[in-house]
Length: 142
Image (cartoon, rainbow, N blue to C red; front, side):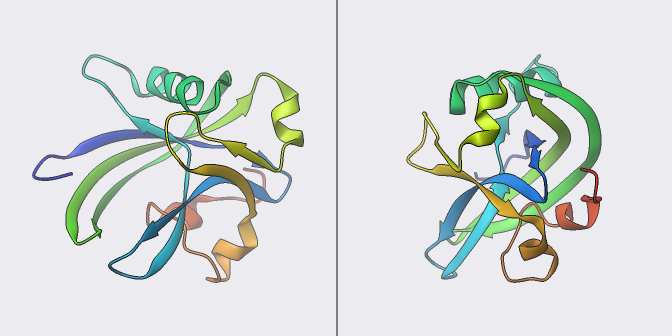
């Protein structure tokens, strides 16, 4: 973070009524939040290609990128530092269906764990989903 805008590609992967997310914590705010998997887009890389690369790096999984759900601009604070992201959100599916059977997946390049969280938890406000605006973009079929 800092004084640059970071472009991201995130994958909206569903298992019935659940969304694949990782859990994060902001110790300064005392907040637990969730975000879909994905990551930074490198210079010269298309956002769809970045999403495929990030899932290989994070889970060792291949995904098929489906459709662009939307693009969100996210200006935020995390751990008392400012952040600014432009987020490309895509629906995606695992190539290997065995990933849908796992309740949790260790993220390979981070100490976090990915898990399935019921979308209703985000819609009713019991859990926080970032980037802001994603909850409103989630339709029943996504």
